[in-house]
Image 1 (cartoon, rainbow, N blue to C red):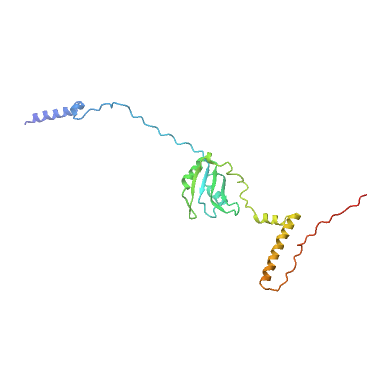
Image 2 (cartoon, helix red, strand yellow; image 1 turned 60 degrees about the horizontal axis):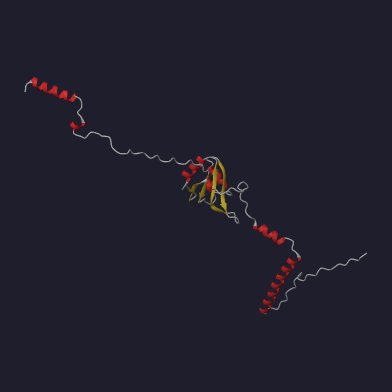
Length: 215
């Protein structure tokens, strides 16, 4: 092959490369055709409902983590509106669960997300949002004055020292006399020669009737 023939072949190859692209059938693959049928409709996911809860339930509260400590700890997230720890009415001891309310619902959601399962004093806190419709209307009753335990000793002292009526006093003396008689019988049955002193005030004098002279 001569030099002229080689140059001619090179020009043909360049001409083929720079020529217009062939149709899909000549390229060796099927052409793209529009799909028949219905188009897929992308379902829009519903937006997450806006959080309006400001009250949180707190469970597994450790011993020593009371109202004052809880107020100081949760203030780092935002303003604490009010809080309450469930306590025993008789003893005043904590029941290890309570409720806390924030002013901002966004702060309450952050606390619920970040502080749930938080390890505090070897106790894993359980924190969850309480929906507004599930908040009991009496949840915050008396929360401002704090918990005041019932003084059962003072109540019993007042009941014991109150002025008794004549019938109540007679009933009380009758019980004392019965106990004394049983004690005397036990001492006598044991063969002990002992004379128990008499009870003072066991005999109640009847009220005297006063007759006034008629003028």
